[in-house]
Image (cartoon, rainbow, N blue to C red; front, top):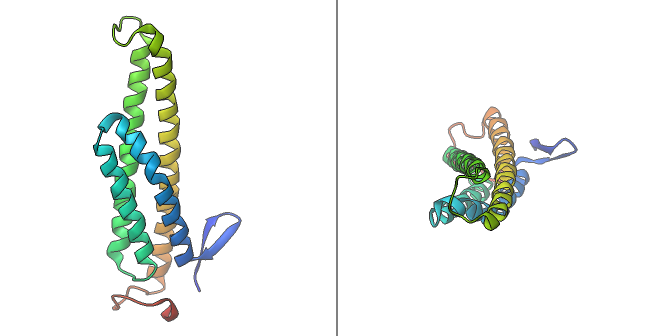
Length: 163
């Protein structure tokens, strides 16, 4: 049985690790929806739904080994990370704009609240992006180990007992 490290002190087989990563990804869906909703309005929910689809694909990959499932998950993670960093950039620009005194809208009383909110959005987006990058890294390493073992050579799908 092939093992992969989830963290320095914990190793498990690749399939269980992928299920853990899928669970973590699914838990991040509401956070990502809310963070993207700030700038993209309803398109933020699309990001979240796509991320949830990625988590489902990762769970399916533990039962059916198709290269496309791993590739799709990695692409979904990459798109969400890029979106989160765009959110960080826009929020930083907004915080800087709120710091200037020549802005008429919003009123000065609300600027501090908006500044604090956007600083929170920046920190939360960076944390979510780093967690998603870590998830993608673990999945990529697991995929490389399976590929090295020949799990994808000439066979479209394998069961757990065949590995």
